[in-house]
Amino acid sequence: MLRVAVVGSGPSGVYAAQTLVQQREVPGVRVDVLDRLPAPYGLVRYGVAPDHEKIKSLQGNLRTVLEDERIRFLGNVEVGGDRLPTERMLELYHAVVYCVGAARDRLLGIPGEELAGVRSATAFVAWYSGHPDAAGEDFDLSRVRSAVVVGAGNVAVDVTRMLARGEPELAPTDMPQPALGVLAGSGVRSVSMVARRGPSQGKFTTKELRELGTLPGVAVRVDPAELAIDPAYAGGPAAAAALPAVARRNLEVLRGWAEQDPGPAGGAGRRIALRFHLRPVELLGGPDGRVTGVRFERTAPDGRGGVTGTGVYEDVEAQLVLRSVGYRGVPLPGLPFDPATATVPHAAGRVVRAGRASVGEYVAGWIKRGPTGVIGTNRPCAKETASSLLQDAGSLARRDLPGDPLEALRAAGLRPVEWPGWLAIEAAEAELGHSLGRHSVKIPDWPGLLGAAAGTADRPPGDGVPVAGD
Image (tube, rainbow, N blue to C red; front, side, top):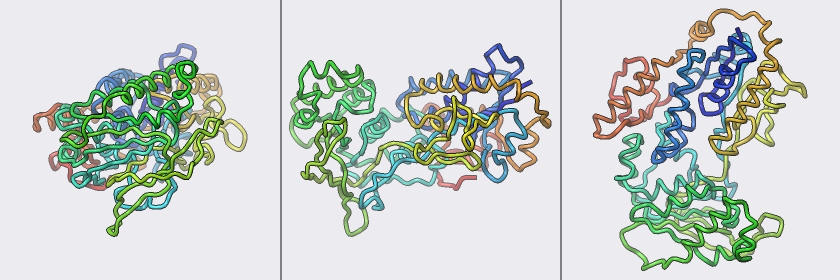
């Protein structure tokens, strides 16, 4: 029997486990899927926006895999720490596949980034998604009238949409009650999503973009002059036809908004402005140390696919600035790490140490390829890694292993949450939602999650009281 550990229960980890147990070339593969959190599904649970129910329904597919009798879920297990170093993993398993994602957001690297009210989109998403590490986050939106989101990817679109949505649309989601209360009392009336390059180079998908135009009581504004800077727009239909299909569709959506009558200023509704060819150069602050706006420099195409500054500046008011300019992988103690790419060096998924493949150690997902692609991209990525592991199975299986790794984890002082514990969390979240007159509502803190998993919560789970992680 080949015993494999998969570290990470998001899509890449679950797809890797699925490939390993469903293949027929190497019989008898058993997989433990370990996760630092007591809840599975990774970014599908904690990264997909609460109002995207269709995408979140992918949890059902991941659930089917994790319920396979050849796969065991072990949550609340942190790999790489003092209790469970990576070296110990190779003593307990024939092979280990690391699918730990890219958890750190990139900084803007401009003056004023330390001002209060300048936050990462990563932290905002974790907060409204109920990630237990974000239980202590505080997003007071009651005094925010204008927000700026810096970025042009799907995460930037997500946080823009969440800032503009109203309570009636968010209440049916699984958003934690404290976050729902803050968003319901938000004073935000204007959200500017700003990109340093042109619309044809946006990283958002057309479906996400179009959704901004369907929000009740929200007007979307696009300045035709900013579209005109983009060569693909200025060049007319022939230039646009040369674009990739997604970029071409995005440009059509933006052109439609630019051609609409902007209507009268003011009103009780909210406005979303999609801005292009502006790069942030300074975050402006008031005497109280809070952000008051962003200074942007107008950019122009440089003829090589990038942009250059024009020396023309514009200040945009903001009491909240969310940066959404990408993610970086985080080194895992015990594994090699390439700081230039923020990934683990690998060859077809095999971890490379000192120029040689380390048989028995593998990577998949963002820590393998960088923060690129959509959820479905993880399937071929995980399949490649699993194929490399299976090719090594003959030599891997020769090693004798001790007994059940679960006992070793407990002996190390860890408290793994097994599948029944996760089902207990699900039941507790359903009960919490029922008590609030909503559907299932996430428990947003460590004590609540672990208490629900053990069936011994000493307070109502998810009451929103910030508690430090276990």
